[in-house]
Image (cartoon, rainbow, N blue to C red; front, side, top):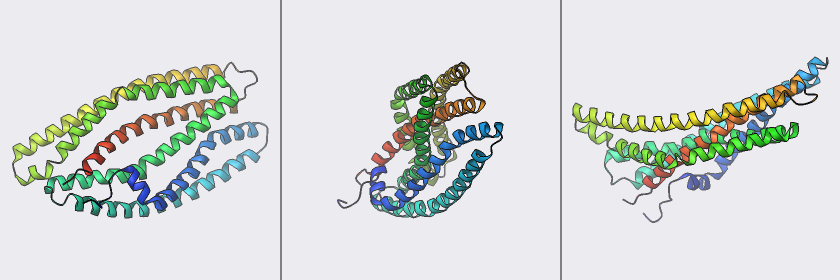
Length: 283
């Protein structure tokens, strides 16, 4: 099937650019507003302590705008990505129509993961990138050392994930290979065979989960050190206010939460890369 479009994240982005672009535009606005919330809360705290409610009203206006955009975005998302799933599912099944039903069923489910990534994981990545950028800028404005420690944390986290990348890729291959056998095993109507299949699947999933737990355990060690370091440093700054300390702590924590999205996204992309190769196999 020479005219069959390839399956993968980039081909989906290219074919459905308008729908995906609209959803991502709304996601970007939503997350830009979210990233400003801790700063506006800090201003509101200082304003209220000074007997001024102007900053509190600004915060309320941003909350209202955020609610409207969030609702509109989610209503549009469901319809846009639902139509993409239908189109992709039909194409994947047509591409693999000569395969066993077990393989066709598994690959239909795998194809949905590509769309799930665009609908669920990419907005989280948008959140992460925007909040990381805003956090670094604001921390640098308050005290450059706070921003330097944030950058060091980010480099360390990406480096830790790099050491796990190949293991995640191999484990996803094993899980997908096992999943493709499920319908065929069910057709055999053999409890022993089904139990062995489920045990094999569980074994691979446990290995993946264990690797995931170790990865994030290591990452959280450095996150804790980062938070403690910035909190200690903020207390030594001259002329610092309660609102500024709140902003430092909030943005340091938000930076940590957002930075976690980067290795999570790389892990997901590793799995989707394996799935894309599987979906693009010639019949």
